Amino acid sequence: MSTPGSPVTLDLHDIQGNIVKAYSRYDYSHARYVLFEITDGQAGRGFIATLAERVTTSAPWGRGSTEERPESTLNVALTFAGLRMLGLPQASLLTFSPEFATGMRGRGAILGDDGPSGPERWDPVWRKPHRIHVLITINGVSRDAIETAYAFVTDITGRYRAGVRCLTGHRDPEGRNDMPYQAASAIEIDGKPTPKEHFGYTDGIGNPYFKGTGEHPENVLGGGKVTRRDATTRAGWEPLETGEFLLGYKDEAQEFPEAPMPPLLGRNGTYMVYRKLHQNVGSFNRYLDAVGTEYPGGKEALAAKFAGRWRNGAPVTTFPTEAEAEAFAQQWMAAKLKIQQTPKGPAREEAKAAFAQLNAKFVAFDYSKDLPGAGCPVGAHIRRTNPRGSLEFGEAFAFDTRGALTNRRRILRRGLPYGSVVDPQDDTGEHGIVFMALGANIRRQFEFVQQQWVNYGNDFRLGNDRDPIIGNHGTTPEGKGDGRMTIEAEPGGGRPPFLCGGMPRFVETRGGEYFFVPSITALRLIGEGMVDPT
Ligand code: HEM
Image (cartoon, rainbow, N blue to C red; front, side, top):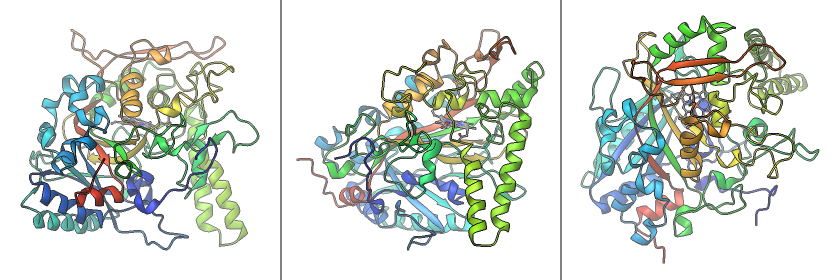
């Protein structure tokens, strides 16, 4: 039995690789996402059984492992309609979570998918939710690697064409509406992939770290949960419970998450939210240019307050000025270079340790010294989506740790940017993020964050303010955006609060669905038609 603090051993060969690894961190800078409809259960099961043998697992690769890092990865996810088409017994279907069964479109009111984010504006392929059954995600270290993996997928689709059809209807940058896949790739600068997104921020920094994925234990700093800071824990951080992200294990409440039956179907699997999010880059830049002239500190400081991080990724709560953030980035780069330039041996190990310490500053922080938001505004994007223990004010916590409320709302973020920005003053065109959020409970984790923390402000004592970057800001009768953000005052009579108003919607939904990411065992059971909940 797992008790708080006890280790968890995972069969990483049974868990799909995209759950444990953010592929973009492993140089997989290209991706292709392909959707399928199943029209015949038997052919569909053959398709799934074949895919199960090719799926990339979470088994470690590279240094210290017997597994080679593959050129491309392949992962499979299924919708509720897909599970039904694949012949899962009704008794088993009924045990999936209601929000998964309803699907993203049906949950639109909760997610704020209205106005320009409404389903009628989505890519054609996402407008027929009951036809979307299977999602295959391919990540590759190069475009060639993607093509090779895609050729494999096309080949097996052909083999099972009696009952499996690739769905067309993704938009592409050339204005076509009928693409058979969604392409995504890291934004390149000087021909090299970067972790940037289209508003210019460094992305993919913060991600949860949970028990059983011990490949990189240093990820507990900032990735785990904030503890009571007693002497027995590592710098105040420990891994989150596995059951927050994987079905079949205890979660932060020391309970097993609701999971589909039979247990073998759910165990080592999880749920995934896929959202194609368009970025109105022109509106974002124009807003920053205009309001940045009034904001003390200027446009870059304003951009940093929106996100909670400077565009180079440095957290504003730790590095309050642009000069400090820049100096940190320089130090970080020098420390990285030093590792490359130091010959193997104790000196290299020392250089690595120094770099690791600096690197931790990107993530190993909380807001305990910044509760009123003078450094990082309470309504900034990263503080809303991961308040890191700042929801419990004062020292007398209701729960065991300051972050107990936040620890139940963490999400694993995956995905990559898509398209490119041709004119930075223009909103039109195809550019945004394919956002994926994984977690054991879509309702408690992703939907709660999206509804209560992104599109509402009450938990932060911010009334109806929404997330400045991704909030579903509306339009006033005068045609201006109605989004607002409060940038809190400096304590002790310093800088007064600054109020941003008239924000238009910077991010719009262009499609998406809720998926189940089965374990390899579950894929095989489904493929063989052997799911039996009795
Ligand atoms: C186009 C849409 C989006 C953009 C441009 C965006 C941008 C960013 C940026 C720049 C960061 C900071 C880098 C990092 O910590 O990794 C970040 C972090 C984060 N975002 Fe977003 N984001 C988007 C959508 C979303 C959505 C839809 C959610 C969830 C509802 C979300 C949840 C998070 C979380 C949980 C973090 C990490 C916070 C932390 O651990 O400190 N983001 N995002």
